[in-house]
Amino acid sequence: MTPLAVSIVGTIASLALVLIVLELIRSRRLRERYALLWLATGIVLAVLCAWRDGLNTIARWVGIRSYPPAVLFAVGILFILAVLLHYSTVISRLSDQNILLAQKLALLQQKLEADGVREEVTAR
Amino acid sequence: MRRIAVVPAFNEQQNLGRVIEEIRAFDPGLDIVVVDDGSVDATAAVARQHGATVLVLPFNLGIGGAVQTGFRYAFEHEYDLAVRVDGDGQHDPAQLDRVIAPVLAGEADIAVGSRFVADVEGYRSSRSRRLGIRLLAVVVSRIVRRRVTDTTSGFQALNRKGIALFARDYPHDYPEVEATVMVSRHRLRAVEVPVSMRERSSGRSSITAARSIYYMVKVLLAIFVGLFRRTVVPEEGTS
Image (tube, one colour):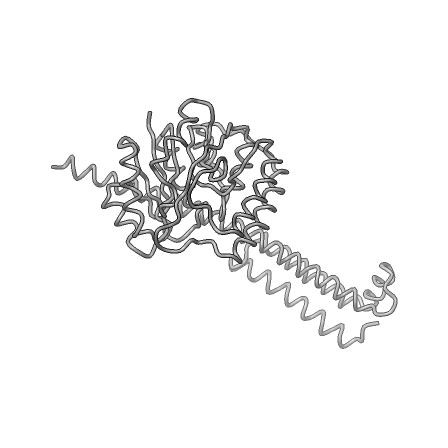
């Protein structure tokens, strides 16, 4: 069972994470879709810290006998991987959009210049 | 018939002027649009000097993004025929008639100049790259069920259908191989015609040895994943 002091500190830290995420959403520095993953992380962490026998129980469910905290590491690493994968998709989409914007910019700029020349000619 | 040459150029102030003049010598009725892919030299100025339309990209997109910009221009301005001639002088505009012929005759939607169809003299690139090109050729030929010998050639001609497809969807980085597969998946008719290519006369090719391995792996991945993509036959005006 998790020692009481560790449990209390951990729970407070996890709840702080949740609050920080909520504040970031409120001040529009974090979009809701990306925030969901972080909120989930914070809540899972808080539950694992507050539920003092939780780690042992879950470890027993999944068949880990020797070292229950391994559950925590496994869950943590999975979360990190999920966040990173999500970032890769976001970056891919952003770079696709970036390319499209650059192309449209080049086309519009050319159009503008061509129209400008035509106006000059007709003005004379 | 409205026809246009798309000329992608990245830092090609040395070669570009000659390329434009050669295109004009081949066919004065061919409009020329140079895509300046974020060059830091006088590429755009040289192109304007020689009377070409210039599309200036705000930063370097790589050959795929640059070429697509040109095809978008061709699509928006309703050209019926587009050819791609690289600004580094590798593609010889004097051989454009061979590349254009199948498209003009209505036999193909896209025709690609290949260095390896027949024993044509001329530049064939380094040994390791040739090996890579051959391996890709075998894989791609299998997939598209047609003999493709030069999957990395960008010397090509397209009709309206081809322009519409590439304006809408064109692979990035090293686009030609994927584009070959894409064209077949979209049921466009493609043919290869024999051409010879020239070694670039000045400057340095953008592909180094280490990069060509990365290129191989990336392209193979892109091809195999691309096979599982939903295909759409492009229709005009839906882009």
